[in-house]
Length: 407
Image 1 (cartoon, rainbow, N blue to C red):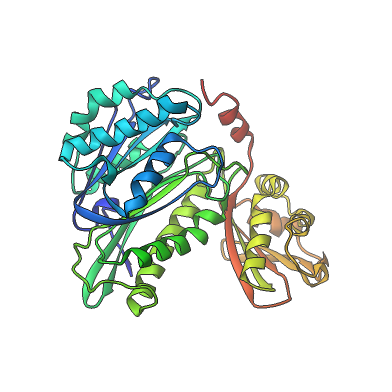
Image 2: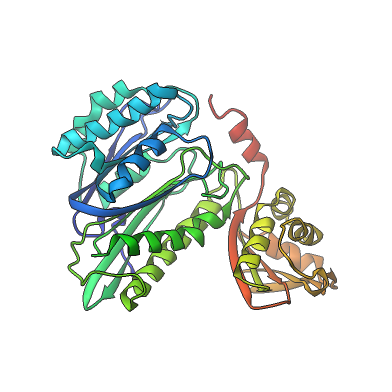
């Protein structure tokens, strides 16, 4: 597997673009994106588990029922959530407008929105700009970059990637972009993620690969404990690579699935690093648990703890907060078997052994915790289960950003 450029435009058969249409009234930053495939794509998606779902989620779930897509249209600056029937009609209108550009069915278009909840979507702004959006489509880095910028809200960094693998002697590409900075907590973490691939792959295999990739990446990210109304992950497979069709359980599936997982984990870590107000990426690695599910519960509990996050911000080696978070996780483990270390920049300091204090240098620990990337290593000492979770520190700026988000 090798990393390549191009994002969602790296796989064959895809174009992307983005423009400013006026939804973001306080700036002229792009706020409307489009990804389009020349051919009908095998498609799969996963959505928020929040009972309150945005109109875009409801419409996209309906459109994805056929398992095929040609396009994704997305806006930022307005979530189109909690907007009633008017919001549903606006989301359907978005799909219709995109479909009309290419003389395809609106059922072949997915819709995504992100921004402020509870404000009617100014659909007229999209109607007036749809032709310009279609004209913005390109099949190169510039098209990908424009679409990526158009889905960003409080994000401060671009989060994207593309990889190339070989399946049956054919080069197969996977490209992706993601936005997400705040209101991030499983299941799923608050995000919009668009993935393209030119692989030939059966629908059931694509569903399986996406589910597995999301479970160990986006479902293991926590910034602030809030799960959004708009979370959506889409993948479209154009089949342009010309490989023999990938089926579940095959060697080709394992190659494709591992590549997709690696790309999604990269994006998940980038989301955590770009958490609202964050200054540090915090990775929690748990090993020695009863099983992988137990390890996942422990890792997520620690990564989600506001007290652990605050300690990381202050570079305070307060390891007791880690054991506390493990204790209320609901996971089964023996506290007297737990070891904890902090690691970063090639250094490691053990701070807890057998669930008790282990003599360590506060100065060395503070140096590690002052870095931009921190790893909390936990050994549960009771089995072979392991899992990783991704988070960030909790800073003063998080409150500043969310205290006046609408203004």
